[in-house]
Image: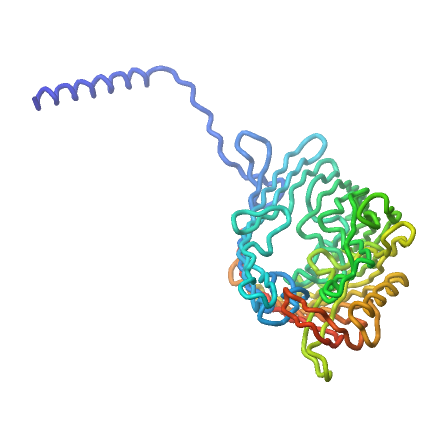
Amino acid sequence: MKMVKSLILGSAAGLIAMSGAQAADLPVKAKAVEYVRICSLYGAGFYYIPGTDTCIKLGGYLRVDLALNTNSDYSGQFSGNNGARNRFTNYYTARSRQDINIDTRTATEYGVVRTYFDAVFSWTTGNFAGAGTTPGSSAYSSIAGAQADGLTSQGSLGVYHAFIQFAGFTMGKTISQFDAPWVNYPANNFDSLVGGSGMVTGVNQFTYTAQFGNGVSGTLSAQDVVAYGQAGILNLTGATAGGMMGGTYGVNNTAGTRSPDLIGVLKVDQAWGLFQLSAVAHNNTVGYYGSNETTGHPSNNWGWAVQGALQIKNIPTGAGDTLNLQAVYTDGATRYNIQNLAPASYSMFGSTGLAGAYQSVAFANAPDAVYTGTTAANGSSLENIRTWGFRGGFNHNWDPYWSSGLYGAYAQVKYGNLGRTAVCANAAVLLALVGTCNPDFNVAQAGLITRWTPVKGLTFSADVNWTRIDQKYAGTVVSPLLAAPAKPATVYELRDQDSIVLLLRAQRNW
């Protein structure tokens, strides 16, 4: 049997070998092989997609953050349980984030067609969602810090950029054209700087940019107002005592969209640095005075903002050093000064030395506009909130491995006669305010960051930030029970408050 089996197998092998040899003698057309080729047209990292004339570049980063004395990765202890400064306040927040971006470019007879996509996947420490003194009612939100545009599992998904560029047009989601090139970061990692616009996570827009030569360009843009452009339109008649203590002066009654924000930009970008002048028109549309259409509504009005930005490169302090400066003024367009990653309302508690007071508090609110009334008969028109501010940063390279940045920001918020009168009347009735009433306030910020880059693409940094809320109230208020931050119903001193945050970061770019 063994001999028969061996004979059969040997014969089969021989037949296969013979047929293979005969097949090899036949003429066969070789299959084309596509190799990945470097695309040098658009800089380092681009490759041709096999079989096409389109170039592609993949990039991204992995980031690990540890933020001390904050309930969020990018901000201070400014409101809610963050600002309560008690056992419901997180002492730290941790985040891990992966960023992925895809850049494609194709040369055409009309110029380069570009697409760009950038998304982040994050896992962040949850915010504490306390319910005050009710036993067993407090909890953590496991998806705190999630982006507004979606959730993935128990983390978060953020789509920061998704746009097409063609023949001078930009269509899709990217950084606002109003913003300075450094957006929120003149020299920092801390996200919540006031003093200028900073829609760093991108906003939907339709933009045209004309190049005039020698680094001079002009831009016209229409961008979505909903995601990051609205600070709120408050009906001050709807104020409550708890709301005011929490930094809300009324009921936000922003209506449906009527117009995108309309932006114009003039930019000079040359070897010495950059100058940019930006302007925006912002429509404020409010809902009804009361609960239905028959109550009427205030007329729409327009807000606006102007911003100037200046960058000076290679200053005498060292090679690669930069100085970034910007200033802004807004009238009914608050988010172009107190940008969307900075809070528009504050409620911060602290200690007091005033006899009879339990603690001190600073509360403040910065909407786009305010009004009063419940019907057309007793309702007012909209009154815009006015602000101004500035921010700046100095970046210095000590050597190829170490660098530091010194930065600061300031913003002032001012109410008109209608807003000031209504807020102070509410404070007197709802909070029994004794002393000086003035809803205007200032925000001052300063910080220092140091970075170490031991190898290319890997950076460790430490960023310490100080923020002061300089409110213009003085005296005392009587607060009701504030359940979520567990604050008792008692007397509080009105006093300025401070927040200090340390952000530690490790980031690997690729």
